[in-house]
Structures are given as structure tokens and as C-alpha cells.
Amino acid sequence: MSRDEKVCRMGKEMLQVRSHSNMERHVPSLGHPEAPARLRAVLSALAGNGGDWELDRRAGPAPEDDTLGVAGWLHEAGLIERIREGVARAPSRVDGPDNPVSAGSWDAIITAAGLAVQAGLDLINGRLTRAFLAVRPPGHHALPDQAMGFCFLNNAALAAEIIARAWQAPVLIADFDVHHGNGTQAIFWERDDVGFLSVHRYPFYPGTGAGDEVGEGRGRGFTRNVPLAAGADDAIYASAFEAGLEELGTRLRPAAIVVSAGFDAHEADPLGGMKVTEAGFERMSRAVVQAAETWSGGRVLAFLEGGYNLDALGASARACCRALEIAPAAPE
Image 1 (cartoon, one colour):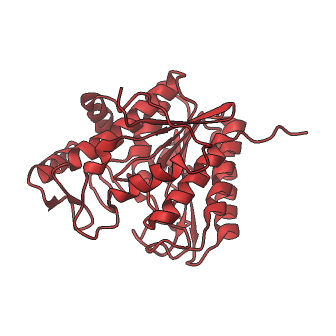
Image 2: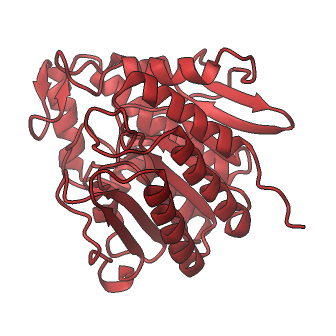
Image 3: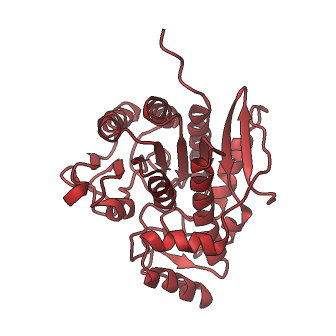
């Protein structure tokens, strides 16, 4: 098996942390914030200095053909072809200036998506209950027909789709990245089997995510946006996330929760403009665990999205994993 998938163990619980070195092969233009160092910072932080995380080796991404088959459920063939063509003539860009690609970008994109597909398959087959997937490039801005915002294929959406289809049961995607997950919203906009919660800065990139964006048709009421003004701190951000999670979780009673775990709302992040700390990310991650224990048999798949200060990114990912690792105390 690949040397690059990581599994964390802590006490009697086990949280799988999956990643792969292929994803370092996506090397955007010089100075681009979504750089390979992001992945190294996260994995280094999860390895830690205190010896409380044990790294191991397990299964890698799904095969490319299987991954592309699932991607074809949610993304148009034209997008996938443009990504291939862009990489073939690299260095180049796909669908705009935010998405530069290098010669190794296809390997990274298909590996990130393949890890999502494999995690979804492992969850539905009982081989996985809870995991943090340290992937890049991120995915939550990837639209059905367009790459944008550093994103090419929507990793979290692929995993959610596998679960929803296989079990014919609802799935909740919860997104606490500072930027609205417009791609995820667009994919499931008219769906009532995959709910979408996003807490984010607004108005801000990508310009979507107002409170009145609630879905359409069968999907009306299954999208919940919680827009926040710049400068929101732990209390504001986490409280908003908890309230939205309770509201949409109660409505859906999801079989699993998929998290778009972006850490660019951190107070040190150069792009976010918020004041969240590691404690805030840990609190939101604990809320996800509590919701999953209530409705979803504890099942959580969390996917790395944004976060561009390397120290803050690593510390926040570690705080998230610490919360995902620990089940909530039983009520007295």
C-alpha cells in the first residue's frame, strides 16, 4: 500500500487521517497561496511533537477510472476534459486566473478526488467511521461545469454523493471555510437528500452565500447559509455554526456528516479577515461529532479546504482532529 496514507490513533478511539504525496505535485504559479507547503504543514502538525499521534499506513485513493466515474455524476465531462487539456499544456490555467496548473496537477487533482471516493466507499462498507482527509487542491468552489477558487473537482461532494446513493439516505455537508462553498451549493441546490450548511464571511469571495439562498424545488430548505460580517471571533463563528448544524441536522437526520474543513477564518490567515482561533475550530469540530453521534452513528468525513498561514493551518487542523478523535461524554 501507499506509504502516504496516514492513520492517527489516540487512546482507544481511532481517527483515520488520509493523505498522499501525489497531491504535492500540483504546483501553482510562484507566490500562489494554495501551495504544496500547505499539505506538508498539516501533516507535520498532525505528527506533532508530543507523541500523541501515531502515524500508520492504509489504503490509498480509488483507481482513476472509478474516481472519474463518480466525478461524472456531479461534474460535466467538459470540465474534466478542460482540466486534462490544461495540465497537458502546463504551465497554464483552467477556467480563469485562480486556477493555474502544472505538469503534476492532474495527479494531485485525481488523487484528492480518489481519496474522497475511497473514503465514501469505505464508510458505506463499514471499514471507516471517522476520517480527516488532508487533501489538496481543495474542492468546495468547484461547480458542476467550472473550476474556480483554487478548486477543480469537489472532493467533499463526491464522498457525500456516494453515501447518499448507496444508502438512499440523507447526508449533511457542513462547511466552516471563510469562503462560501458555492460549488457544493450549486451541485445540491435542488436536492433534498444532501443538505448543505455554510458559515462564512459575507459579502466576500465568491459573492454567493446570502441568507436567503435556501435551495429550490425539492431542495428548498435543505441549503442553510449563515453569512457573517468580517471580524467574527470564536464565539460568533462557532455559535452560528452550531445553530445551523442543529437546524439542518434535525431536518435531515443524516446518515453521515461530511465537513468542508477550511481554516482560513483563523485570525492569522492572510485572506480571511476573521478572528477565529484553534479553539473555535475545535469547538465546531466537537459540534460535528455530537451531531454525528446523535443522528449518524458517529460517521464523519472531514476534508481539508482553505487555510493559508502555514502555522495557523497546521495548528487548526490538529485542533480539528483532536475534536474528531474524541467522542462526546455520555449524558449523566
